[in-house]
Length: 314
Image 1 (cartoon, rainbow, N blue to C red):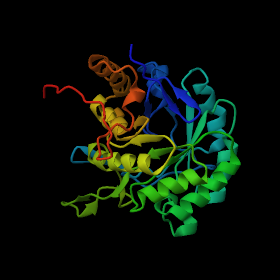
Image 2 (image 1 turned 120 degrees about the vertical axis):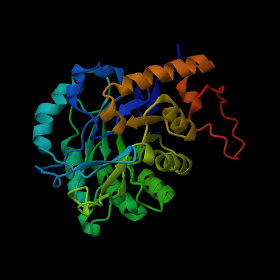
Image 3 (image 1 turned 120 degrees about the horizontal axis):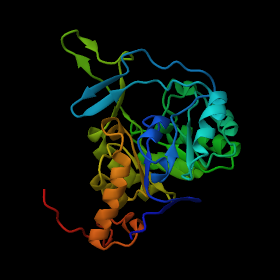
């Protein structure tokens, strides 16, 4: 049997597959065994009640998706009371995704969700920072470092920093997150994009612009995962357009230690268990003993003799 287990800092995952925040529902427990997954990642929460953005919130674009959900949330109290107890029935580590409008708000929420049953906190620093004219924390190294320092002081739990593709300073932001106290990098959130209905001449999203996810995002997220793995000395979790085992292999070879699956779950609710099974079969057929042997093996001109896969029929 192939060893699919991976280490994300101090956390051991039975396999490298987990959901992307906001794309996973507890209702999927009726569809497949949630302990099949390497980890559980919750929908992003905020400290207080949040309604989210105006409708329409989702639209299709050329095989991918635009969304502008706006992080609706029932608040941290409801989350601790109802959501965390649900996940206590499972063995897979629980990763709680949080968002805040300011660094202090982020830190306060981080402290509040540092409770029994939570194994790590994913900090969505790709969300707007109202103290920086609405620019995401992770757009700049300086704001990334500042917020991560405050978050680090607020909890003893592992911190996963979710980065944004809407920056031209990916390596610098990755290093700033690590220096500020991140234990892993989630690369990346959605890319800011837009679509217009030519018949009505109105944007297809109620909030005008939204985040691009799905296959169109994958080459960008893959490039970012590679850059972050080179720039930082903490694990990278690839996220963006992953829908099959081949996509997972690309991210692992690029330097990611694990991946998150998002938009593909909307198309096929059992896609994650299928990917895990396909990944196991693929590695067995190649005679690869451990998925960890693939991480960072891209042949990139730095004398890295990566694992070579046999050609498969189209």
